[in-house]
Each structure stands twice: as structure tokens, then as C-alpha cells.
Length: 263
Image 1 (tube, rainbow, N blue to C red):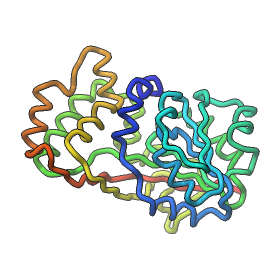
Image 2: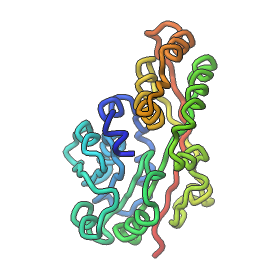
Image 3: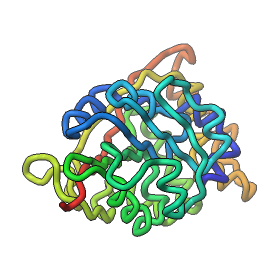
């Protein structure tokens, strides 16, 4: 996945939605300390800079150097390129020592990881007690019936180019392994029972097309000689959108898992 996102790092940075600040206030309220956070698969830092409003230091890592070159700057955020799987020495050197991390976050990326190895490392660096891990993703969106119909057709046309791990996202992270103890009441956010959230963004037609152009299946299709966003599809989007200068509200359903390490 890093190789795909490397190829459209600038588009990815410009067209990914910004996460609501309230999410990070909520996560911060569940950690006992606020010294160190680790944002994994940080991309261009959409989450990292918001996390930095609540923690003294944020280590934001990604396996894509190109992604991090377009990352938002913040005095409390340190960006670092890592291998897909870090050794313990790399983990402790780049992120922090055992039991030193208060919050681990992964926005729209954990389904790409070697989960067994990643979760094992998270359990080593999370502070006990009081450390929290949160992972989330979004899938389909709603704008208006006319545009939604075109979006649905576009996503269906990308199915042959999906990575099998995308199934975790389509299923709302309900089937994603998450071996951590619940943090929220009634077991919400635990394995098999994701917390359901929603975020809204203001979107232009150019932004919507940029979002699709930078998505993994569209890039994969393009590499195989298939233009998902061909002239016919773009014309359908323009007709459904109406005035190209219009800005619409886009609603994205989000699934989030939140947990803590067993003591």
C-alpha cells in the first residue's frame, strides 16, 4: 500500500478528510497521562497535528517517505519513516521505551498491517495502566442522491482491484482482530463491536475527484491500464453535481475500536 500512496502522495495529502477535533479530546480523556502519543500510518499527518493538542510529544510514523514529505508541520510532532515491520530495537529507538506511550492511533490504515506483530509491539510500548489504542476507518459516504448513485457505481467498478484486506473496512471493522480490553462503557469500541461515529466535510467536485484519484483501487486499476475515472464517468459526476462551483456537505460513517492492554 505504501508504494501506491507514494505515487500520489500530494493528491492524497490534499484530498483526505480532516478528522473531528472532538475525537481526540475524547481519546485524551481516557489516557491517564498525556506525555507521548504514537500515530502509526500517519500519512500526511491529518490525525497527528490534532493529537498534538493533547500530548506533549507525538511520534508520527509511516513507511512512505513521500507521504511524510507532504505532512503538516507542528512543533510537537516528529515524523519518522519506518520499515513495514520494526525490530524491537527500532521500536524503542523511534517510538519509545516499554510502557512509555500513552496513546497509539491508526487512522484508516491498520487493516494493511501485520496485525499480530503490530499488536504485540503496541502492548509492549503502551503505558500500564492508562495507555490506550484507537484505530478507525471510514467507507462509503453520502452527499446527495444523484452524486451518491455515481459514487456507488464507481466503487463497484473498482472491486476487481481491491486488496482482500479492504474487506475489514467494508465490514465496518466488525471482523478486524483487536486483542485489547474495552475502555468504553457497555463494551463499545471493543473487538466485534466498533464505536459508530460520523464526520462531515465540505466538498467541491474537484476534491471529490481528487479523493477517488488518490484511492488505492483506482491507482491499482490505472497501473493495469484501466481508467476508472474516464471521461464518461467524470461527465456523469459533473451532471450529477450541477454547478461545478457548488460545495456540498459530505457525511462519512466511521467505525472506531478503542482498547487498553491487559495489566
